[in-house]
Length: 463
Image (cartoon, one colour):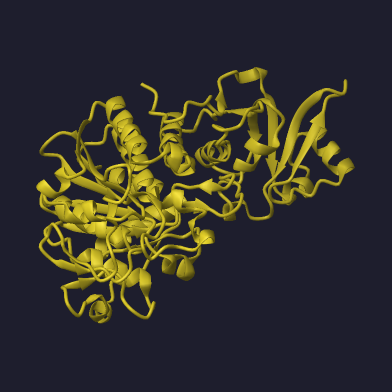
């Protein structure tokens, strides 16, 4: 069975073997020492090709037809392990294969696949693209699985809210579950109050699309309990504490946590890992209406802790609080939550490195190792107890928006930690979910972050 696709697209890979054109991926040393194909070397020298990172030189045949390509890796290819992603966008349409390259086959194929991503759902014209033969020593099945998870996250984030509101996100969630024969349950609207999800209801009640809690279950009881929670704010106006227009431009991506845990769940289910998987996504639109929640309101959470609303634009931690408390009740062995939560995380680490928080030193070590092994960057930030005082409120147990603005990502993580008490190991990922500009493995836009590292950690932990 092929992996799930939210938007169906042709594979970036081909199976044509000898009928494909060769790509010689080389460093400057290869040019200097002449250790490549003689015809390619002669053409490179005539053209002044220096094999700089990401450079491309097409090679003609003696008859003047396209005969292949030289692709520069720079002096240290390991610095950009997924540089082959540039090939997917730079090569002429056609079928290609890697003839030589000082990179692992898996890195080459995965990099090419990641770089091949296009979000052209709304384009009238779609251009033909290049395809690459997966090297025989690469794990093609796993590469396609990881691409499917990444592409799902990217597709969901890139889709504008008029086509990715709460109803449509639920439909995508159900489609993913159906593909892998997972069980789905959904609690919608006022039923959230009846079943004790007051904060999810509070944040989403002003929207024309009812708030809801999505839940997926897959796997076998008795296997390791792994629970994933994702923030599903389909659009964030900021509520009554409304955002300025410029800050709203990317708010379709505020469901990036949900998109990423769905991508991770796809990988887990597609690989048939021996886990008891549970995915929980609170889904809302933080809209403005006469019944929108207000600054100064106080609400009781599912866990019983009361929360004072000091800023309606700090809504993500509210819906996550109920979802995490619900997840925690089953005492999973591993609980991961992902959310586009704070601007402070981006100030600290920029858009490309999501911070994570955990009080489990062994888990932190293993996640860091997984990050390095997969070239999927993450960085641990501290759950510093000295900042606990900042999340206390004058009239309630907690505030959703500490005053002062200092250490915003840490105080948000400390807030969420108050709703996790029974889980064996918990980690919170404060992701951006967006690539600001084109990179070798991404054309820019919605982005999957940390899920390849998490998949590697969960998979290797079962061996």
